Amino acid sequence: MDALDLLLTRTSMSRLEAPAPNAEQLDIMYRVALRAPDHGQVRPWRFLTIEGQGREALGELYAKALIHQNPQASAEQIKRARAMPLRAPMIIVIIACKQEHPKVPEYEQIIAAGCAAHGLLLAAQAQGLGAFWRSGEMTDNKHVTQQLGLQENEQIIGYMYVGTPSSDCKIGAQLEPAEFVSSWPN
Image 1: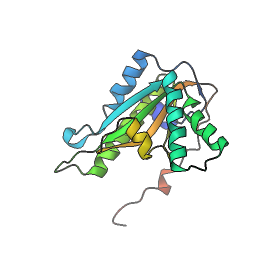
Image 2 (image 1 turned 180 degrees about the vertical axis):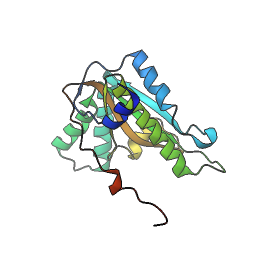
Image 3 (image 1 turned 135 degrees about the horizontal axis):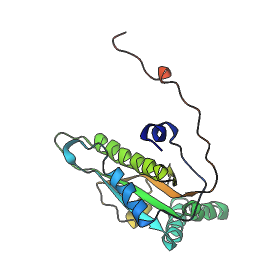
């Protein structure tokens, strides 16, 4: 797949199964992520890889966080929280590491971490893997961030689910650039 074809057909693949990326594929994914734009060479990102039984442990953490947040959560809601990490054989937690910097504001550091996450998606697809990026209530849940060992200056910006596509993925409609681009001054 050439680079432009990859970029023009990038899509989230939400139906994933084993196997997860192997060590070589994962290394390539991280190398691509680390090429993200990074003003000031701040390197405002880090990643946690969760697979195997770690996914079940993350599901338990989600269930406890939900109960802590909502003691009246139904059994079905708790069951869904436990099952969330089981949607793929691997999850990569994408963390923005915000640092005081005289020229690189916090928002730019978060965007850089997002660019690194996009690199993970692209590198997965380029290698025939599938991935999708989710946020949601467990992204900024204090209980979850504490148990995952995040520091005060860190913020989860998403969970990247990664695996082998279990079916052909449909590529979404191509958007027209003219709908989003204008010239200034008019």
